Image (cartoon, rainbow, N blue to C red; front, side, top):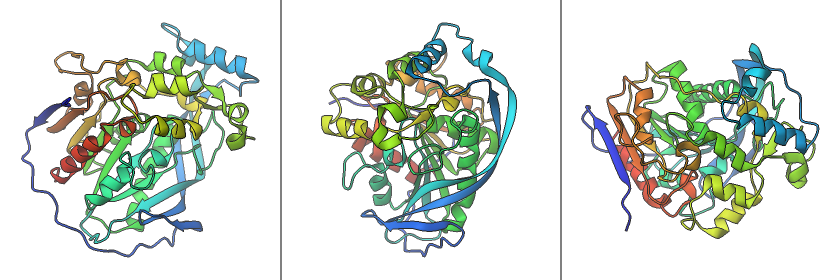
Length: 390
């Protein structure tokens, strides 16, 4: 049996897990409520209007006229020493807008006012279901959180799922996504009374979360970053391997009418290369997820940042990255990085003020941590870590 690697820097003593929680009422008076439904996981779905002012990048780029033009652009992005981003960047810009963000709040029985709520951000080509996949599925992170007594908030990112889909080049960028996420965190107290909030990001969502912590410091009482490394060691190869297609042409039954700046991954082979590690995943889940593949915009691809140091974040931090993550580590995360024993461990360099830092590297696991056979044990580790973080 394989054993995941754990690297920990702990200079703060850990406390015992929180006590069990009791029920609370939830009010949604400030939210759009024309689409509300109860799910099997004691969840409520709704739209949250967020009013943001975000720093973005003005890009001298129009929507691709056809697939060949899109492929050429992406190919130039993956060139060695590519300058395409600099070539199309005009300069800084601002987006001031109100967006409706599809959201879901799941609350366990017995939730109390001092309970923990987990705020999640999914990655590219995904939606909220990355964290809430199927009822009683071993790959359902939300169920693991609820069993631990935590509430969990998931949402479809801007330009994804049921959320608004504005201009995919000038509006749906990393800057707007970060502003949307911060606005949603600010609205959490209007949704639910709770004691602690834990941020949980995946991949692109972890990049957004790092940006939130750079900007807002201790926005979360603890943070879990999954599928992350200090830089995208396999980023250009991963983008090339995705072989992105114009969404409206490739999946018209889902995305007809969307502008051509909204794209999807090319197909099953592309997803396996970039997101999975064979044969350590369920083929049926793999097929199901690919049939419902999500979106990414050119605006996001062209504004992926170099991660900055979150100098003012001091709370506990957990990094969880699969050992064969293609995007983050080029397929091998157990490579030393300077003084750090692995590439995920080097994320500590982005958080110089954090004294409670832990890395968990599940074996035989690719980029989609939640969809490998290692997921149940990974979920247990994350929930136990959260329970000991306060």
